[in-house]
Each structure stands twice: as structure tokens, then as C-alpha cells.
Length: 139
Ligand SMILES: [Zn+2]
Image (cartoon, rainbow, N blue to C red; front, side, top):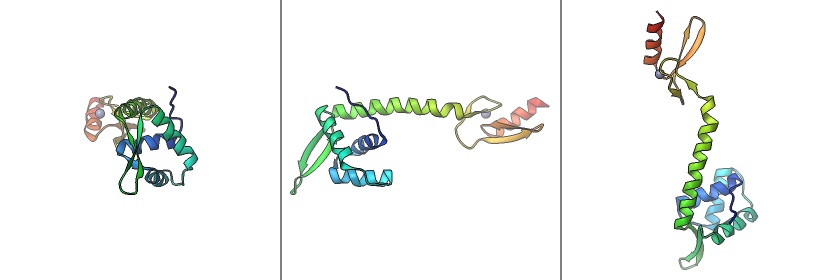
């Protein structure tokens, strides 16, 4: 079985289904909100069909008007979780080289942090305390 998530649209579909079961039109509405444009149903339904064939998604007709609801199966949930895990590794790889490292303790600075100009050089620290500790060692 060859099921690849090759677009943001597909990823969003999976995330939305991971949130909970959705009707087809609900999916499209949610995707439109997230993507800022109306997605083409010719991209959505074939992908849902593939997911169904793979046993990751089941289609249930519920309610009086028998609206079709898509939901992830147990194995579908596991698959999405594995996908997200691999993605978070990729995101870490993409983000880490851009992180500054605290000049005092060496920890990575994800956001905020503290900068201090020392002898004309701006140094980054994770916090004020590290900056002060560093300046003490300079003296
Ligand atoms: Zn530090």
C-alpha cells in the first residue's frame, strides 16, 4: 500500500479527522478556513477514498438525513500519530540550526531570551541571570 501525504491539504485532512469525525462538507469548510481558499473537492474525495481503501478511514451514514461522516479507524489514528511524530522530528531539524545558544549555560534559546552588549559584541543568553553570571566571570 502506497499512501503518501504530499500536500498541506492532505495533512490538514488528516489532522481534522484526528480531531474527530467530520462530514464531507464540514471537512471542506474547515479546510477553507485553514488554507484561506476553497479547496477543490477533486483533491479531497480521492484522498479520502484512498484512506478508506487502506482501512484508515471509515465512512458512516449517521442521523436522519444519513449524512456521510468520515472517521479515522484505530489503525488510521496510529498511522497519523506515527506521521506526526516523524514530522515533529523534521521540524526540530529545520528549527534547531536557527536557534541561538546561551553564551553562559549553552542551552538553546527558543524564544525571548536576553541579549547583552559586552565590549561591543551582542551576546545572547537564555535569561538575565545567565547574562549576569557570564559578566561576573568576565571580570
Ligand atoms: Zn543560559
